[in-house]
Image (cartoon, rainbow, N blue to C red; front, top):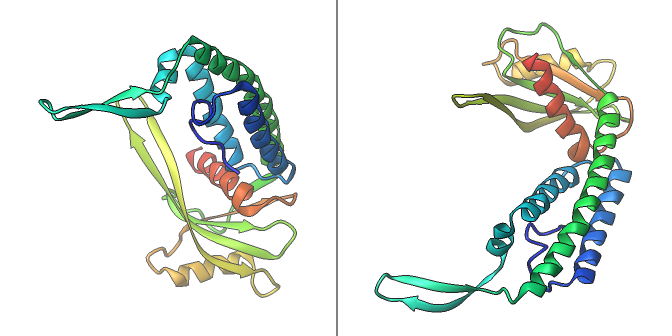
Length: 235
């Protein structure tokens, strides 16, 4: 279930209807949180909250977000002309009521998401596998899937963007292999397999990430592993 970016101003603008739409989506978010699925719900919550706050601060944003209809053409300047489908002040008041209702709702669920994030983050540990090379901006992440002997291996690369004032980092990952741990196949021997897989990395930076509780891999473990790794290699 998704909540459109322009959910406040699109389709039927009625407070009770929009309240139903929002609460239905937030119920979906709550169900995901109960299953320890943080993403994409948490990032979508942040985006919708920021949009609602921006709309509240700037009514021009509300006007700009309205759909348009073609009203004519300026043939001299080769331009099409559009009218905003905005009716009257009563409509604006309805939108303001929707925004005023939605902001505290978003804040409540964001607080729940933040609390869940911090709890799960406290259950995740990261440690290097073998000797750590000087170059750690690319290498491998080995995810130890909770409750199983399965591991997922991802290639990672940290990218740095700079402007005159600050530096930004992002991390890209690509799933490359799965393994099943055994007496013969350990974390260290997985690293040796990875070295044989890519001889251009004779000693790749390799980190194992594990959780002491069961969490979904794609929706929670991998996103938190990426953030944890980013902090680890930056420090």
